[in-house]
Length: 441
Image (cartoon, rainbow, N blue to C red; front, side):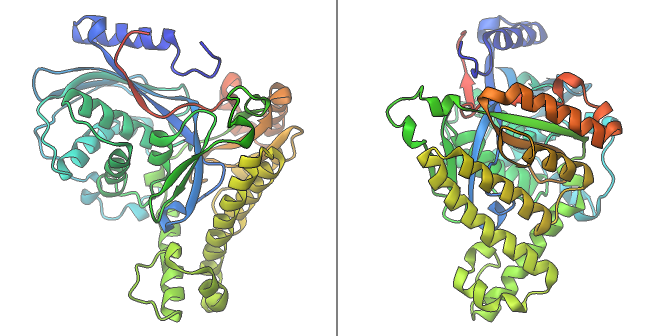
């Protein structure tokens, strides 16, 4: 198998044997969903405003092994969390956030016991989404889910990967055929309506649309998407360019569930308020208040009407939108140096204008951008916990990873001590989209 191939043959066979033992069925009956994690080189924090984004999947992610049940029962176990999840696909599912006063005001990070009791919510959310779209489910699943070790709260969109995995499993068990675009909408329902997270469609789009060696581009306003292949790869899929970079994942040691952090939903509300002010000043106050609905000329003309915080959010949106467009040009031409410079500029704008991140993450970002061989770096995910991602020259990836690990341990010894040395900085490669593996490798 190629180095970047994920999952490996051993991982697939181990999963088949595990689910076979759990269900008391033949290993050949086990179906497996591979749902990769994603990185977003450019397009930070603008998908929920109808902006343009870029993404690619990596060769790490979630595996869900399952056997369709003979009835509506769902039985699940997890490689990360304790206990079993039991429910029926015939039960009507209700949003989990509806019982909370306001997810924006939940500030405490859930402890491990609380996470253990909640890990089944993504499976229930998948059933909720399918029910909401009018699909009747008759068959449940007996399944086992596990994510790549240590990456479940890293800012690589493990929540969307889990949601997509369960959607593909329940669809397979019930002989439902969905397009990638339909599943993007279904996973949006899981995150927005079932979990109460006010994010956009970047994560699930990347997970469902990506292709190895390509940059996935999406206009989140029109939902148009494109797989952008570097120019040098148009005729030669094994060109030097594809082999010239690796992806670094550098971990901060910070772990907090995104739906428990007040910063994320608050920033979304601030972007919408900025859009409301700009649209009203433009005589378009009836238009949905999203910054993606504000023309750049209108922004330039009326941005002085925004207060300081709203001005920063709008500046991030419009500058990041431009960085995505410039980044596509750099990627297409194979200019990794320029592409990396734009990634680092995105990271800086996330700190200065979007005002996410905290001291450990900012230190990690600064260490990465100053590491020889790194083309560019920024926070991964929302930037309120987790890791930073970087594109690095393949020739010096090992040396760069070792340097980042050592420098971060000096800057944040207590947090660094909580991370296993072998997992503090991972070297990854691009991967393919989520898919069902129904036959033995």
